[in-house]
Amino acid sequence: MSMNRNESTPMRAAVRDDTGLAFVERPRPVPGPEDVLVRVRAVALNRADLGVLAGHMHGSVGGSGTILGMEWAGEALAVGDRVGTVKPGDRIMGSGAAAFAEFTVADFGRVYPIPDGIDFERAATLPVALQTMHDAVVVNGRLRDGESVLVLGASSGVGLMAMQIAKKMGASLVVGSSTNATRRSQLGEFGADLAIDSSAPDWPDQVREATRGRGVDLIVDQLSGPTINASMKAAAVLGRIVNVGRLAGTRGDFDFDLHALKRIDYIGVTHRTRSVEEIREECRKTWADLAAGVADGSLALPISATFPFERLGEAFAMMRANEHFGKIVVTLPSA
Image 1 (cartoon, one colour):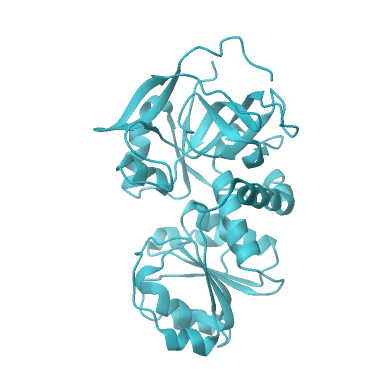
Image 2: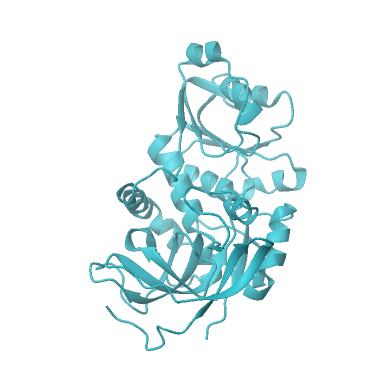
């Protein structure tokens, strides 16, 4: 294992303490035999980070003293003895716990190379969106060439990526939803052929009209809650609905008769109950299908704002106020 001579130097990290966000000094993490030690250059915020900061658990992550963050880009500083895919000095991006620090440790299977021409800030926006939505659209959604796709909650970072992935993987029609008129007007730049307002009572009719009465083949649902019956109305017979998120609520009325009538596959997904091996395989499939799109820039997310690490609190405030379109990025110093 290659290691920097300053390995015992404490690092700065952002944690959740009893009062909220705090900056502390922590020992630099030590990589295990299948880990990569990363010098973090940029991190991106995700909705789950807000929950952890508020004191909620996200899977096994949370509680006072937790180092925040789950998405990063940087340089490999050291690698474990069983890691053959990454070497010290490589520019890499990935996901995993405790990302909001000067150094983090990641399982080698969750690490992607950063293609030439992509800076750390842009790279930090990609890992979570790529793997989440490849898993939803391609693996669990089973998208086939020529099918139609609806992305509910399309103006989020992962939603924008879902539309781009659907187009790249051969969707004939992509519909995106947003309740914000300004954001809705921007969805076409990221693959939407039709943008709808999911708060409008007739939105399922708009989707059915766009599909000549058939309904969409695949719905990537980030809303759930009270929207599920409308989603089933918009779905085709033998359609698939992949439950990725529950921004509209975790409970709601469910029309079992409509579900049976349309013979819909309703699929729930999360990363919180997946094994290390499952996540490694997910990342492998993601990169096999999408690496070329990342390299040529056809799979990319807008950066709404960039903050230095010491202004992380402002970045969280911006996300909490829902004032962004795309991703919020925080940069760390290079020295």
